[in-house]
Length: 433
Image (cartoon, rainbow, N blue to C red):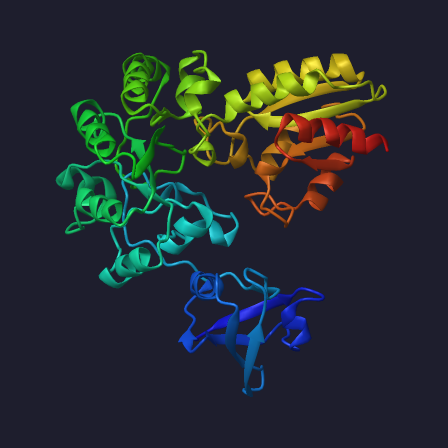
């Protein structure tokens, strides 16, 4: 269906004055048909005079002329588009390793350059059509987030499980020539794209700097549900320690050469190795924070600043749940927060029984695993749950356990908090006010 379905209209906006309503469909702007939200943003970005074509639910067509101040919003929000599906068959694909019984959208593999531009989703560009590449360049969809994994074409085809894909270096160089900024990642698979192949990939991506602004290396994630999938070697503690000993100095060398942090190792390497994290300055402006790079150093920096202004609240007991990998630094912060606030705060690491013990991050904790871990535990006045464990805005865990269900099971209220030191402190304060 053409056009964009209008989800809501802001009160007092231009759209409300024009009697545009939720459920209407915006077909075109200035005679240009709309394919998606990117078209809408692009066509309305700077024009002060607009001609809108609207289709009402009954099929009636309206044409409206709009005059506005430069940059003034029309007050429209739109329903999210269905993402383009991924046609790759990556050896390490996390979706292929999911157990049954999770939220249905989790089984959808997306490979959509629009979501890369709008939301920072990583795409491989392996399925990019020439028309899409032309559009990226014409509308200057920058930055993009690109999964490279290897620049060796044969190895990349093996990793992505798809023959005949375009050479990634040519694609990146074409985007660089169009001044598209790119953030890239390598999912590291020991024995496949490490060693000399990793050296080649890093060198060839660094050669495209500054268009390629950053490169993150993240270890592959292996769940306990890899039935009938290729055998892959996990990143264990010994491997992580050796990897850091080689690649942290290489990262430093590139930082000096390029005069900006470029190569980043995911926090998970340091968790697995049991080694200290790099200095916070080595993360620059945290371009790969959403990719699990620098979250811990940033958390610790924010925690230190917060603890200077914490004031006593009152004495009561709460339990805070977290993932296994983050337990150490979260526990240390909560001990100091408890001492300053007077609240008895009990941190609890939740073992991941849904995906298996090798998956230790907080964002993949299931509601049933929390419920099982808390059985027989004296929770206290409330349970604090970081928001990364829940689907945004819906209060549901990966395994379709809702907050209300979990509250009923554990017999006490749950407070969801922003997954930052300040978020935790504010949650405690809100409980007593």
